[in-house]
Image 1 (cartoon, helix red, strand yellow):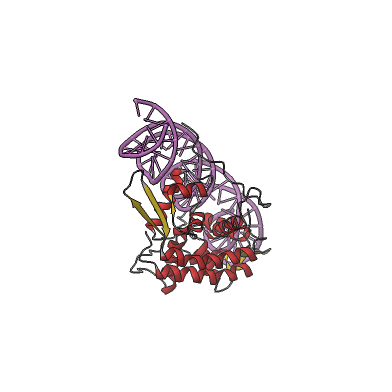
Image 2 (image 1 turned 90 degrees about the vertical axis):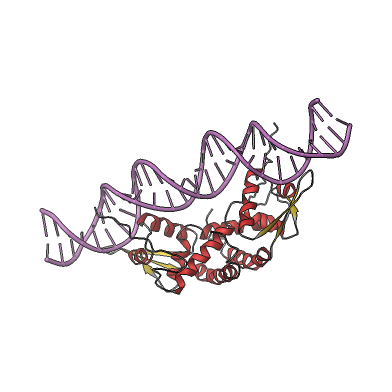
Length: 126
Length: 126
DNA sequence: CTCGATAGTCTGCTTTTCCATATTACCTCT
DNA sequence: AGAGGTAATATGGAAAAGCAGACTATCGAG
């Protein structure tokens, strides 16, 4: 049989092979989505809205999360500039996490999506 | 060593064990996020904004997607009430996909998130 | 009768995500 | 000297997501 897949479009920054300006937008969008998906990211960000928190404080605020997951998710959020990690060279070590401006600015869009979810929750599966 | 994990909070509909009203909200939010995450969901929805499309039409509009992925993602979007699947009992079979009202109402929040991504794109990784 | 088009399903594989447990390094307190 | 708290790493495995390729059923065109 013939190969069924079509060569995927390249979505480079120079937009090589793009069919239109709306194409690159989708890619940017996907990056934003990926920055906030992850089993605990939303909860972490929502916890940090109230103010900066220490690692152990967050751990206690999110029952069920493992240390591993928490460090991983925080690292990812920091990598995407959503939270800011501040390590104080004290002993015992103290590390604080806070929302960046990007993280704070994320909240209104969270609100919008939440309103949407509220309106159509009866149709949402699982 | 002692067990380090704490018993996870239960997020049942009756909110058993909830510490506050904001808890259940996170869960609803997560459902909304999950409804739109998936490698092709955004692109599919964006394609359908212009109007209803047939299966093969979508396949051609999304180079690189496999039939399997497309059916799977469409099925999931339909399950969450974001797209509407209409099969015409003709031969050869014809199946059309269109955005539901929920899908259309999703677009403003997409816009908000996209604006956010645009503003902070330089900090977003990968 | 074979070919192509349509809209799928089924099978097996790889990659990513998620999760639990163990271990580390440092210092303070007792 | 030993326990305890803090923030991580390391390791190993299970579950979910993603992917390619083969296969199906139906009908009309040639």
